[in-house]
Amino acid sequence: QKEVEQNSGPLSVPEGAIASLNCTYSDRGSQSFFWYRQYSGKSPELIMFIYSNGDKEDGRFTAQLNKASQYVSLLIRDSQPSDSATYLCAFVSNSGYALNFGKGTSLLVTP
Amino acid sequence: NAGVMQNPRHLVRRRGQEARLRCSPMKGHSHVYWYRQLPEEGLKFMVYLQKENIIDESGMPKERFSAEFPKEGPSILRIQQVVRGDSAAYFCASSPRDHTDTQYFGPGTRLTVL
Image 1: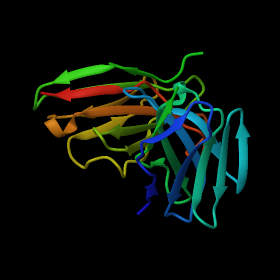
Image 2: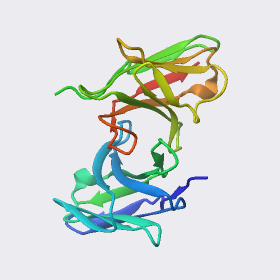
Image 3: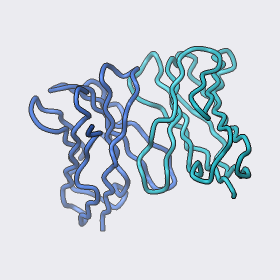
């Protein structure tokens, strides 16, 4: 069974701080990893994808992947109140076609 | 630069009626996925389609649910004889190449069964 574990939160950080979101997955065959952001009542919006071990940076966002530990994280630098949302971790395994989603971590950035 | 289109955005049905949800992928995308998000639950995969083909329907309930992606026109997710437990947000996503590629989501259809 393909599982994705995320801390549901809420994770509360002050404006301007770094928010760190974590995700573990059970399927060692996973090859593609994604972070989506979902505002309440809206659809998931892609933040980043990462395929290789290590770090990948895009603006204020950094994704980190460690396949040996089956761990992927998202760092948000200089957090803004507009970053307040639920962050969904997802992966695609070698043996399937679906995006397997975690339940998401709720992030609250306080002014 | 149209994204993934879904309609209707909101759909209300009474128990026993049929619900038809439509999805038009992004221009140039030929891979369509349907996901369901129940209240307070995560997104769950239902079905993956390419034009005129169902590639993977492992997440679809065996009864009452069907999906198609015809040669012309949008992809359709059809739910027959709806029950209250079908109330959820149904999201369609599309990707340009295959299932390992990035999937872009539409705005969703929120189905309410009375």
